Image (cartoon, rainbow, N blue to C red; front, side, top):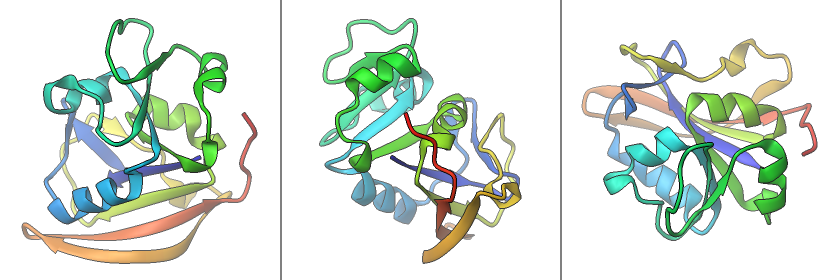
Length: 164
């Protein structure tokens, strides 16, 4: 299992259930990377999508204790429940929000991080991988300069992946 996220200089990822900024090239990277895969998220992340609908061309798994009756996705309410629903960890991406990232981070092999060279007002954060001994940058996948914002897309590897 891997994860994908865009962070600012302070590892902020969102504000009021919205992304911190618009980077169309990063969104294209997200779509290309996750299409045809399983995406794993929390209820608030699902609600942030257009019309609160699951992402197309992906299997959607949503952690929630309250959501009910949503078509085209699997609802799970715990790690144990998640283990019974996930079919292919190798083709899965955790996509948010902050609580789900923190919950599943130890089980992820790689993190695809778009590091935005700006500071934004944020109320949701991702753990700072640069401060963790078991995570290291293994590849720079590209750079973005869009809407006056510079960002780098980096691939991190987890040297201590836990088993589910």
